[in-house]
Image (spheres, protein in one colour):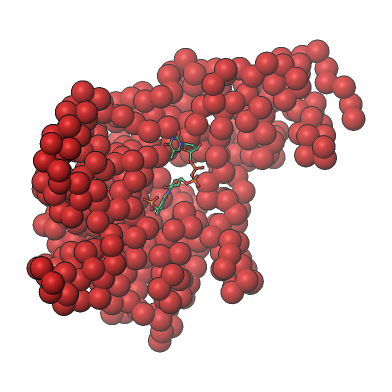
Length: 405
Ligand code: T4K
């Protein structure tokens, strides 16, 4: 084991104190006005109405419908259950085409109910499913496409819709990341047969845990409502198969309160994003993903693609450096859903048709942002990265030693 040089000792990976006393997380929750949240919670307790389509859930659904410009919104306990319900309500069976570059819930929601996810490769420019790859996976068993708006940047909705229409497939969107984002001037939420938002604690808008299914199709909305509440159509009257996907009133109180602060969340995220642009300015081998300024964006994810050959250190080495400094950068969505169970056992060769997913998943790091991260923190993160690059040989050795230990 080589001893670190005096210069690399300034880095925590070489034994110095971490640059940040407290851990900086990706996905630290955005929290709106606490007084308003507390007063909503007090009112909720006074009413003694805690779940089952209460007034706060109804208010949330109406507000989201207006915000997004969609006819029907059904609040749910989380996006994973929301996806499961949307998938059932759409009536897809057999095989559904999904991206491999997404959070595992996208595929699990299908597999959980006996529908086989078939992985299609991504467009490396957008990280979203590549519509031209979708077409080559269609078989007689294919009944749908479930595409994710990765990082909140909308998919190629037109190309996917055209394929779905022409091939008679149901088109659903995992819009977990995309609340508050637009595509060609239209808010995400109204595309395809249904779209599902996540309001998990780590998301742009959160309800602790939660989500919402949006659709412009009245029949679909009716089925989703029934399915979300065990199939009840009134006291003692079950008319449909269903589950318990209901959102609680406490969750809705948080979501309604968060909704009142979306402009503030966006401006903090956008300022942080600009601070990262400055921090990575002219750093060869680092590509920060861009958001189209002509659209509405929530800037919830700061995503950097690291080209090891150009940068001099790999994504994994940089993540190790940052973790030592208490900057908990994440490697989403490494190693790709096709390399997670049960898919890697079911489809051991899927990676052969997913070269772009494999290459991008090995190069991405997601950095902390949100209302808990300051521009000064970001400047410091930039300096840490530059410092690691200046001492790349020693850093590489230290990371190697660390992984051997
Ligand atoms: N589709 C997509 C494309 C998704 O990204 C997701 C969820 C879903 C569907 C499913 O939506 P939900 O069913 O969850 O509504 C996290 C989130 O748990 C997950 O919701 C999210 N995607 C995914 C991208 O990130 P992990 O496994 O990374 O979670 P974890 O525990 O490592 O937390 C992430 C970071 O956030 C940590 O650094 C800690 C920090 N954190 C977390 C919580 C809960 C906080 O600072 N405070 C908190 O309260 O999945």
